[in-house]
Structures are given as structure tokens and as C-alpha cells.
Length: 287
Image 1 (cartoon, rainbow, N blue to C red):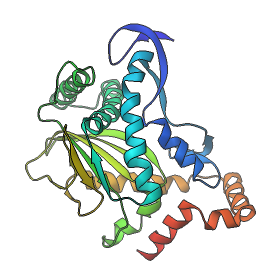
Image 2: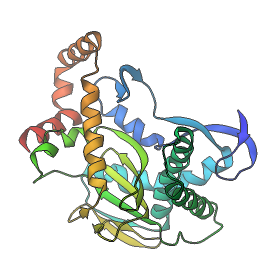
Image 3: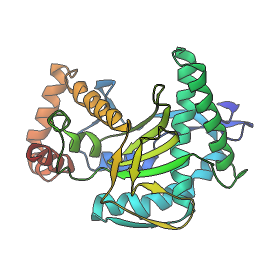
Image 4: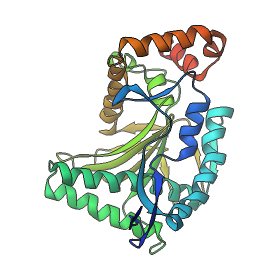
């Protein structure tokens, strides 16, 4: 497909670009018992994550180095080795920006198409997208007041009843996806992406009462720890709605698909008991 690349704006042959990096989908499939399903249509099995004709080959390759570093230095060590401390450099800031930018670019298009966004809110998002695009293209060295954060969704020790009822361990650790949201009243704008329990957040603008502790990623060398993180933010409601959507999608399964899932579990009982999803299910039951 020939078209204008969303990042460099050149007319090029466009690639089918993953919005959430492919290594996340690959690991989710590898550690699943049975098929992967999407929340919007759980009766349909999917083989891959969300993809769009978005970037040219050159711009796809711009992101590869940071994606590989994140996969090898954060993603796999956290999920496989239970590592809690990670050293990083500029590549992590770049990686988070690249994922959030993809979500933001697509969501701006959708907001405009649907037409339910106020012009002031749209301006904040459009201005942020341009800043991020210039940074990703190496036309600027920083992103001004735009902030990147990582929140590690670990084991829950305390939470209110309604939150725990949404099976948070399974909901976050066994899913992937991202979107941009805004709160007009509080003038807060963010993109969030879930990478199997590693939450990437880019904050474009936020209310003065927002509070984020031990989550920010800087555009330099640093250390991020998957512990002692604290968030007081409207993003908490987004987390809740995300979990609610995942759980409600299970109610949309038809009888044929339910029978297939049950049959697969029975036929692969040992594998299921030793699987990541069963481990997370037990955490939800105990929490």
C-alpha cells in the first residue's frame, strides 16, 4: 500500500505496523492455553495484535532498536525472572514515546471522525502529537512538559471490593492494548498502554492534584523499580473501566466458544494448571 507515512510524512510503501509491539503479542500467545481473543468480539479468535498501514519501512526501523532493548532489559526480565529493578537510558524514554504516539495518532483521527471532542481538548492532543513526532524524528531533544511513566501492575495487597471483583490480576497480566483519554473537567490528557501488566503512560497535560510517585521515566540514565509506586490520578478510573470491559466481554461468549474453551482446558489440564493465567486466577481468588 502506497501512502503518506504518519511519522515522516513522505509518500512511501506503508508497512502493517503493530500498535502494541509484536513481541508482546508473541509472548502472550506463547504463555496462553488456547486462543487469543479480543474484547470487542470474543467469539472470534485472533492471531495477531492490532495493526494498521501507518509507517514506512524506514520509520518502522527507527523504533526497532528501542523495542528490542525494552523487550530484553525490562519486559522479559520482569515477566519471566520477576526482576524488580531496571537500569535504563534514553532508549526507554524513546520507546514509551513511540508506543504512546502510535495510539495518540490513531485516536486523534477517531476523535475527529466521531466528532464528540471539544476543540480545546483536540488542540492539546494535536499539539502533543506534533511534539512527539518531532522528538521521534530527532528534530528536537526533549518533549517539554510531556511526561513518560511506567507503572508495574504487580500483586495486589489492598484494594476496594469493586476493584477486586474485576479480577485485576488476570485482566492486566493477560492482555494488551492502548488508548488515549482525556478529562475535560480536570484538563488531564494521557495515553496509556498495557503490555501484560507493564503500563506505559504518557501525560500530555494534567491537573495539579495528580500525584505520581516512583513512576516517571526521564530522557537520560536512570533506574526504575517495580515496587513502592503510588498513583493518585483519574487514570485509576480508566484502569477500572478497562478491567470491566475485559470481564464483560466474557459474557458475550456464545455456547459454542464456551464449550471449546472448556474442552481445551480438560484436554490440557496439566498445562492449564501450570500456566500463567491459572497463576493469576489464583491471585484474584485470594486477593
